[in-house]
Image (cartoon, rainbow, N blue to C red; front, top):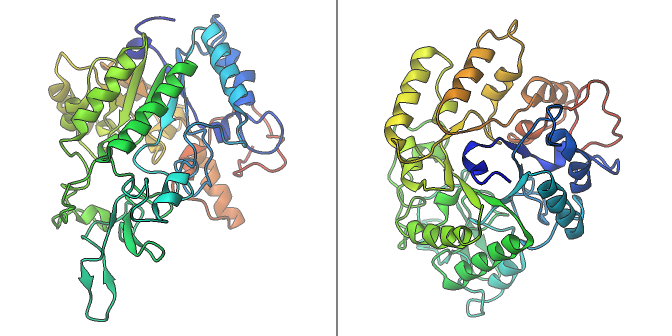
Length: 412
């Protein structure tokens, strides 16, 4: 494997549920990936020639956030296969010179994870402080319990949910079914680092860190100030000074990266949750990349793109290796644009050529879902999760998809 694959190589992101279904149950799986590894890289010009594959979360999950609510960090969801399937995939990919990166969701767990089940049962048990529990600050004028601060969930509503069994609120930056871990607990950090060592020993080549800059919250859980011009959503109407980007994160990143650096050829890439190029550059280090989404935000016009490029170049400078991110699993309109023929979108070719020549790793989550899946759902009256449309892959073959019960409709 090329030792600088992390910096110069092509990374192909696989949303497992959509990539390849080996048994006809309508859900993509690990054996399906194994069967298509030659398509990704067989060492000949006839394959895509990718240097690494990035797998979406493959762990057991109740599926409230399509796999980003993990109930067991050391197992494979039966829908995707077995641990033997995963080790077979690792061996087969490595024989082809292809690295394997896995997604780590460590800000929160599923509410069904044994850690949270134990934590909500007792205020004094061994898992009592593994999550962020707090008493109500006071009762409102109607006697309602009031949460500890004004933080809101990214998905809407308050970021605090009352648990009657424990008699306290718990914090969730996302869904109530995704309680946030308490990263100030030494036991939580030790358990996470031990889990990372588990995957490294299996032979994993790298990790994507989901919303890594949200791990630590302000020690006193101080309320966020208002952002008067932030936007329509409640999340956008706060300045998130106290529920992300806390200074204690740097100490953990050093510990995490030291663990990876001790294993030759390993790397990581962190998803910066709401940040600018300066923030991405601040966290970036050799072999440890950070997604910078600035180029996916502006209007697709020369002046706006030039300004975004200048901003990132100034932030990263000559000593930090950047990323070129044109889309992600939340929004992929630019990626769809790049897939369109020049007759339909004359900027598709020049834009991709421009992005490919910028310094940094190019990341594009390619999907045709914005074009056809949302249309199909509307026609059938089917409700689709607002992020699901970005997780349907581009079919490798032309024609009708002969799947009886696919997890999401896809028009031929």
